[in-house]
Figure (cartoon, rainbow, N blue to C red):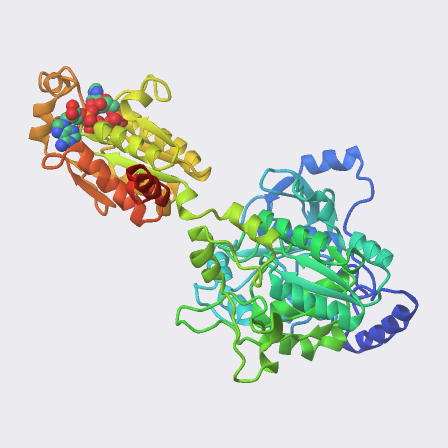
Length: 610
Ligand code: ADP
Ligand code: ADP
């Protein structure tokens, strides 16, 4: 620990009491450890940049970039470097750095061995796009132990825990040493909301309340959150630091672009602007439950908060592979409360808030009588019962502005993209069926792009032949275009022989399995050859075409296709209708109403007859 005084546990106690005296004169609580760490080189000159350009580089992962940004701007104060072995061990076992300060999460820079990793050498730390972030002097290289790390920090080695899975990919060595930060990682989104601890503190100073209540979140902001944050503001006569994690959260969470738009809508429309500060935290969460909560508290103190809302299941990634929760619901609250005084953060330990429809208000579950009727919606209910069905979220649950933003990001299934992928021998009937299906989809209100193998080969894949490589290239191009169409909510029908299973699977992966409908147009070779509408089989038999599917090249029959169409005993129209039925059952289209059943039509009919 370079910048910190390096004193032991005893001295540290003294230090804290000095700090308390200091805070009495200033409005906001002081940073943890007394002052904000600042690793940035003041006005880096050309020489330094030039020097950095000649150094060996280490490319940081997304997580490491987040950690570096927070460390360099002082959000992890008093930590001023990726942890060396002594600090790392101490953090695992005692939740403290060797100088006595609390630090419950290990912040390490793991790397693989390589020419860059040598003691006493300067290296350049770069992001995934090779932008220079910092220069680090390697003072220590040590091995770390996966099972120790998972057990102590997470309390589990269950691979269902998102971080356990990730840790298996980390480099086997940790490196540590002093850092000169040169550039902040670039973010082009919501720039005005990405405040450093120092910027946050000066905004809070202007708002002028000593009590600052931090609220950490990785979810959109709903009415229950609004309610508990407003209660906290009122009870403490304070200001809310709405501080969402926008670095890495739990895989599958609502993306931060969408979330931040909900926070902005809430902050501008539903809070007193003098009582809220929205600031984005580029935090790479560990989802470590209690330890993570304590870490969150410590970070928020650095941003000027002296209170923090900790509800149930804080930073809890859900269920383990035995179907048990990784952490007990209130363990996080308990751990932060235990260290509350030392870390300088008062815990606002809210119980779960639920809605009482009869009284149109929210209340803490523990304050209700057994008879009270309450309602709530889980995340999966929100997705499955509302968003996917195009049903508007109720106002008791979320503000209409938030509902609208979520609806834009999660359109109902029938407005989501879909790819119908026809595969089968030449002349089996793919194009014929696809053309009919195109019209039926248009009739039912979906815009369609048809990527027919023959047509694609005249432009997108012009010049490609029928070797295995060329065919794969052709299919991957079709898959790529299909994936883009699906990503933008369109319907695309692909009709190509696509004879190889592995390549069809590539296309499926590109598009996304929930949106990919593989349809095997099944007609035996004899039938196809008999049809020979393009005269190809005859040419192939004469040897004028090589690698002809079914004659001189394989066709790998689909396994697990969503649909198999009998293209001998059923007409193309019947088959197209089968696909349409499938899409309707999957919720991917909404069939138009038949004219006779529409009430307007019926009334009109009666009127005419009279
Ligand atoms: P592909 O696109 O699979 O090469 P096409 O749709 O271009 O095949 O050609 C199939 C030919 O077979 C068309 O001329 C079509 O009219 C004819 N055909 C006869 N019976 C059927 C059927 N049951 N399903 C599909 N096509 C059929
Ligand atoms: P793929 O790329 O999967 O082979 P396409 O649908 O792109 O399938 O093929 C386009 C057309 O080229 C098909 O109508 C098919 O009959 C024809 N074709 C397939 N194999 C050959 C070949 N070896 N030589 C010439 N034409 C072929």
